[in-house]
Image (cartoon, rainbow, N blue to C red; front, side):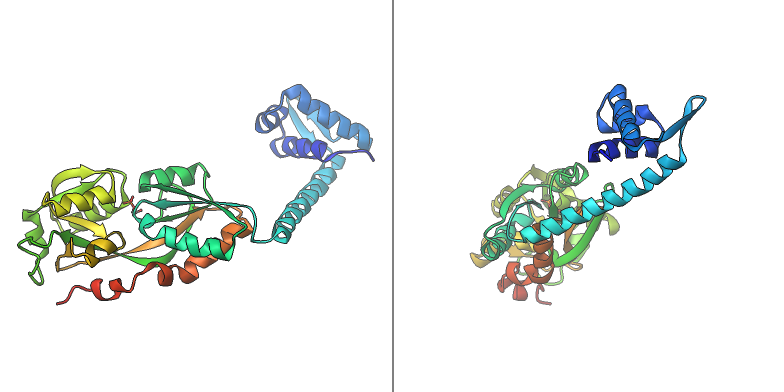
Length: 311
Ligand code: PGA
């Protein structure tokens, strides 16, 4: 029997839709091309696979059988593909990771360790804000995403891999720098330097204040964490930032964490990917690596003492 996989695939689409037109649309083929593939398959088999009932088409008994075996062949092919991928091994292929701009303060450390372990993997890193990450996930444009909160608008799988404490920062000479147990309500008197709309940090900060019925006095708006920190240092206002973004400023005492009631706001970092996405061996290896080791690699020892402002 001389039949091809292509004929079976075209037949499968027609059988699923029971429509030549919709199968043609799905396969980006013309309708005559679809009809021709089905006719050739019928010739090769020697039996009709569809019958007409007015405007509708139905599978004949032979058609039902071919459909059943076609699906079995397709499953076997998928399995074969997976097995071949795993035989190629983890240490090959490309891996596209996208991270929130805030995650980028520790992402390079993670990638460096991972790359040393798997030098054969070609890594591509995209750094952007939360809103863009959601677009990338929606468009299936990257393998894995590291971000502050999984999106609700795209179906994803997500796993927590690390704590992400948000803290209130100020310049060292700020009047509240030495104060202890500052009440949240006191923050209403301060101006805040804000990240842009679309930033996960900004979203978390707004939610935190809204949940406590406090309004934020918006100061300047900046699209980058670095700019926010500079603005706070220059006395343009306080800000709420991820502890992971201020490692250097704490070390060099250019910024201080204010001891505000309710802070640190304990959030988490998530590893996220599109639901149903088949992860390559390289992506699976990165996922396992992040879940098992990110917290140890990415959290500087300094944070152990700084994450809990003293009472
Ligand atoms: P962003 O990242 O503020 O840079 O968007 C943090 C997050 O995803 O929550």
